[in-house]
Length: 401
Image (cartoon, rainbow, N blue to C red; front, side):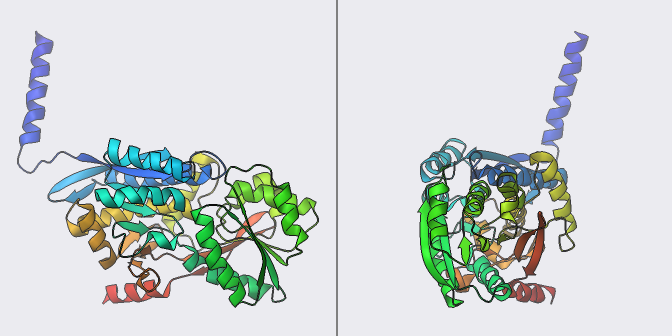
């Protein structure tokens, strides 16, 4: 009887607390991720999930997102899209139909992102993506935003720096995965190489999931190119290919335009990846990294065994942008959030940033973050250049006035 009374008192107290004026219970908002969690690109998805959860936890610990006089907490839900359209479709249906997620804070891979987008735009769900395809942005897709740099931001400064350091290069052999990411990147890469006076003498393709790369490596080396550019190949595949290339005796300029992880490449390719130039990696423990990035980098090493890369940290930045958008719009409506995000400056792991890119995509849907060019030197990742977008510099200057 005594226990019953204690329970009754506790229950009444709890009900009174909920009903008390000015006291609002926090409600969880699910944030979805569609990313590879297995295969050669698994490190991207696993790392993005971890980074996104760090941002969500930080926001939750600080009291959550404040909208309409209420506080909301974030909950991250991630599924493996296996980096292909078929699995991407399944993940899209799971997140948007079964889980009723209204905010996708991470989509990796143009093909699975396109599968998600076909449903998310119709259902009115907001989606942040790392997809490299230009075709996934623009006025036709008002609820889609990109959280990392794409070929249009990355490739010009990357190739220009390579040409400056290797002025005698004349030919390049390119290899891309045979999917939407690879096909859209190939067009941009070919155009920039040729604008720099470097002739594309081979542009080949391979299927994701391939494990035997010797024939492909032999075909590329047989062309005797000055440069081999693996473009959008993930770290695991790149390590295998460079290892095969070294066995064949080729020793030219090595590039992975979408290169994100020197450590993952070195685990497989060893010293064959020495000298590789990458466009989507960064030294998040270096002198140009922010305090937030250094903290996340240490956590990532402990959690997944590798340093943070640009794709992974994009999950953190998307969660921060979503919070800012919700509070600026004072709404949980994805359409209202998407409408206000291009108008505000918000905090990310890089510091203050904004959305822009209208000149390229006909709509300001590109998160403006530094373009970081790196190279593997002496078995370590070295940051060669970190370029701040001119559009961001202007936006920040205006915001200070």
